[in-house]
Image (cartoon, rainbow, N blue to C red; front, side, top):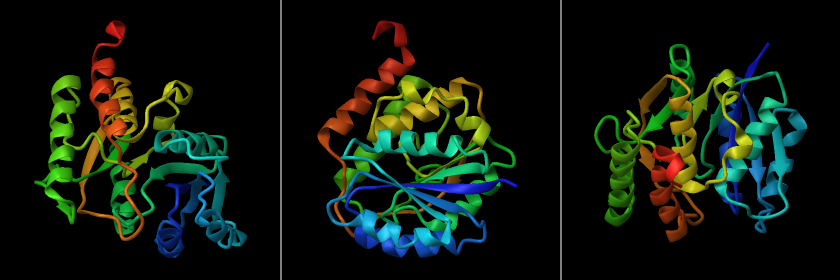
Length: 235
């Protein structure tokens, strides 16, 4: 019998992960959790190991910081190597994605191939972001929709649930992008592969603790990526 797997990438999330794991394990889904940690110097991996004895929490520790996108690629690959997992959920470790919404994302997979926790499908639902960050995110999604034609409001969001067969349609080795760009690339490629996409309204709350991983290079990567996706023969 298959069961859900929640993939959580971490880098210096020690305070958040020790609070998040008990919440995820208590969800009614009975999901396993895979933490993909980039050898966090703050001891995040050590905290995760304390939860692994129960058999439902797994740690995939990479040798160093290699980016959010590649952390998810590693996690997806780990999941697809194990036939017992379906669906596969991705989320941040910092509580900006409400664990309680995972059930709704999984429910949406009864009718769709991919479910996205959307900040913008029912207005603007973001809490505690500075106006500059909110405007950057909102305009990035308008820009992405205009260039690529993706029929969704939140292409840059990182809270998603996939049917196993949906992820199997991706060539994971071909995905090299990170951050915003990674989220856009995955969703666009699945859309072009004919997958159906649901947007589930969520309220996005800025992280409980730790520091944001957003950088200018991540933003500019996304700016370029949407043109590459839309016109691959020109780039």
